[in-house]
Image 1 (tube, protein in one colour):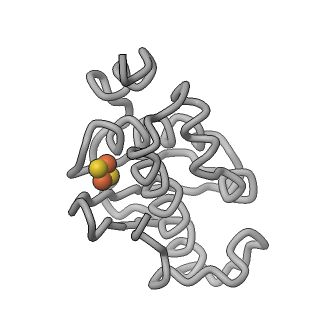
Image 2 (cartoon, rainbow, N blue to C red; image 1 turned 90 degrees about the horizontal axis):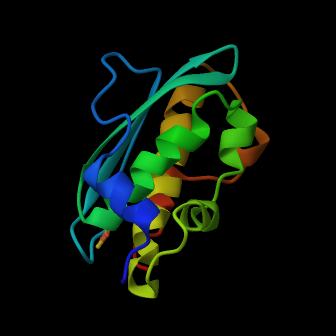
Length: 141
Ligand code: FES
């Protein structure tokens, strides 16, 4: 089987699907090679991500990656959430085929852009965002 049970579960039964109206932060990223698009929405209270939803127009691995990302970051502080990498996403999914690793990168990037959006709107600085440019997220891999 190419995909783990966890991937299949999050693909068939994705968690936290949808939009947050007037979200505190929203990140949209796309991959130009496959054309997939992912959006992650967050609400933040006292530097803690209280709500996280996603909308992904993309492949099953992208859906599973965004679904598990929303679960992983809910209840985390912004600093903790900024430590999440696509490797963590892959690990939590029990692995992804190598040609599908870029799908997990979308989730890491969309989350970062959402946090960046929140930080910009609220004049906040986070260590994990130092040097981060939302226009420079690399979607080529
Ligand atoms: Fe592009 Fe999965 S094939 S995000």
